[in-house]
Image 1 (cartoon, rainbow, N blue to C red):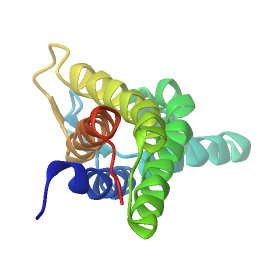
Image 2: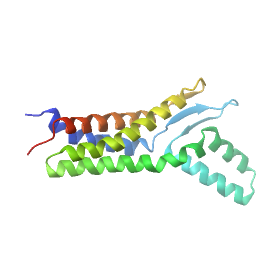
Image 3: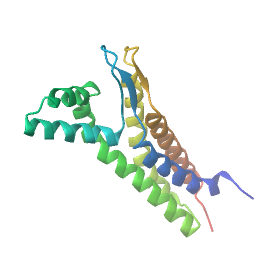
Image 4: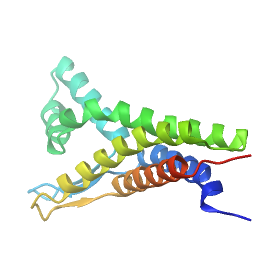
Length: 168
C-alpha cells in the first residue's frame, strides 16, 4: 500500500531535483525601457557579472552594456543567495536519495529537509514578489516557479516525516 509517509522521501528527492533544475531556468523575465528583452537565471547572472568584470578590466565599449544588463536585474543583489540556494537544493537531493536507498525517512531526515526547504521557499517568494514589484515589464520565470515547488515539496515532505516517520 502506498501512503503519504512512504511518499515523503520521494517528495524530498523530487523537490531537490526541481531545485537543481530551477537554477538553470530564468528567475525573472523582463524588458527594459528601450525594448531590450532579457531573462535572469543563476547561470546568466553569474555570466553577466563575470562579463562585466572582464569588460571593465579591458576597458571596452561593451562594458557599459554588460554592466547595464547585470544591474538591470540586480545581479549584485542576488549573488550572495545563489550559492546557498544551490547547496540547499543539492542537500535536498542528497537527503531524498539517501532516504530512498535506506528505505525509510525518519524524523531526523524530516527535520534536516525542513531547513533547506524553508530557505528555498523564502528565496522563491522573494523572487516572485520582486518580479511583480509594480513594473509591468517584468514577469516571473520558470526558475522561480520551480524553486517555489522545491520549497513547498521539501517542507511538506519534511513535515510529514516529522509527524509520522517512516518505519521499516
